[in-house]
Amino acid sequence: MLTAFHKRLTGNDQIAQMHAAKAWSTWEGRTATLRPNPLVVDRFSEPQRALSIARIECHYFTNNAFLEPNQLIRDMGKIAHLPGVIIHGRYDVICPLDNAWELHQAWPNSELQIIRDAGHAAAEPGITDALVRAADRMARRLLDLAPDEA
Image (tube, rainbow, N blue to C red; front, side, top):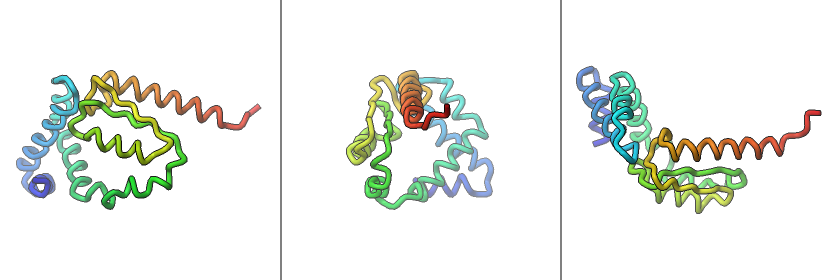
């Protein structure tokens, strides 16, 4: 199916491109949030946005996200010392929760926050709140490490 989408999204037939892009992006818009959100679906379905989303995502998926199998987990030692927060919606059907759990298990300096009333979209209230809080905590942590400028 991915090969068929890629062929249509990159082919010369603009009608086929737009049809495939709209199908791809509408599906994503419908599955991105826990509760149906027509505004998200409408935004994802806008013709040029749909084409951009579908092409870039299909390009990455066709190329295995430019990663070798298990590369993130295999190479975790390179960043294991860095702190990080993994924020994941409990009902995310686009990126399964077990991937976040596996990453967290391999990353000793990570914190996993599972947002119980959220899907995939960063714009969902629980995800947005968690992202802002995590960024604020990280900024304070980095400020505490910065040398005095006095």
